[in-house]
Image (cartoon, rainbow, N blue to C red; front, side):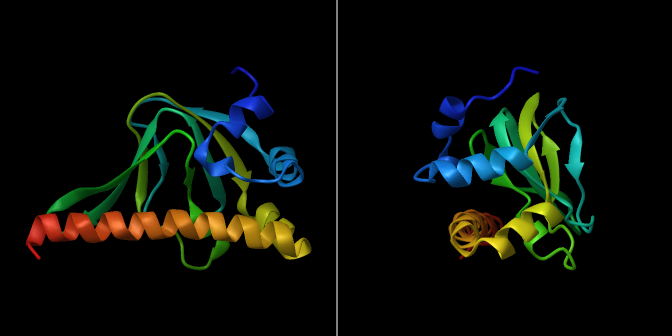
Length: 151
């Protein structure tokens, strides 16, 4: 895989307005991984051990319903995936599947949680960014619900 430079990261939405120190801290914990089309990153109920930032490609979040699998949201390059690492006792809420070839940064959830606890400013900024993602996913889920069942 091609190494990811800080200049590339600066152009991604997840890293917008992040201080260099915090980007450096994240990059020190990051490992680059790849997924092929239709490969499962994680399943509903799996332990939440990793967090991902999508570098290239798209990942779909799916929910199992009585009617089968329902697409909730597509996560595109530059966005985070797997915020459940913050609350590992809850497990994953969705299944994540690569829609195409994907390159991503992956982070060990335990290591990331420890970094958040050790540095309050880093923790506050990262948690705020993750809450933005959670809010967007909740809004997308509500819209999908309304589209499926009417308002």
